[in-house]
Image (cartoon, rainbow, N blue to C red; front, side, top):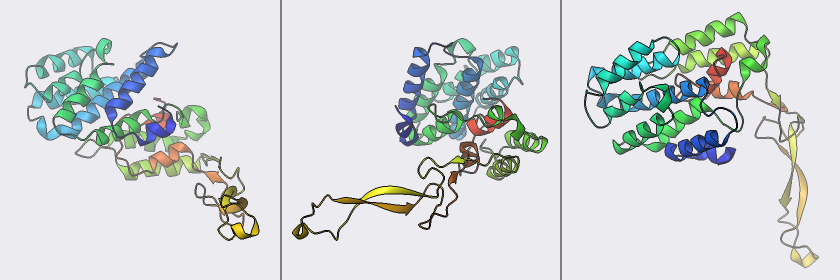
Length: 275
């Protein structure tokens, strides 16, 4: 699965299978602590898609403890207790909630089990695929805003990012307005973007297009093409070659996107140094 396929896939099950197989074939340790955190937060975010089905408080508590445990805010004892209580709550989709609090040894199995349970319960795979992309980003183009340039992590950026991570709506999603403030602060700190790969910074790019006015009667083939300057739809360049010539840093673009965004959002994690 290449970058384009990852961005368009609407089935979280296929994406998970590809990601797990990719990790298994890597030479580095299969599940470092960073990946375990991502997997646990993804499973928890998926469970919040079926929050109305988790009527038993023990099930919801397992998800909440799992989120805190992923960020080092809950102890191993709390995690074990949450798992022990949730597993006896109710069978069915709520079993997915209990899996969120499973131990690290089996955490790589948890997301697949959770996704399968939620899809069976009626949750659309495309919604879960969106959560997966938000948390894991594009594996082919990882975002590293903070670690890549520590100068961008000013006190203002760090404070805004921490607040955006902590404040959530009733459904568990992050606040888009706070995320946009983080993006604005990053931009002010110098995270401006990169040269547009399409127009190479000129604001325009060359394409080969067919000329409908060249007729076969004059000896031209219907497939005859010519070079034409066009405005760049990626960075906003115009036909007069007066474009921005730059595209937004991927962290800024994601933080300003409609989302929804969840704890573990790859762009916010990068700013916070969690990625």
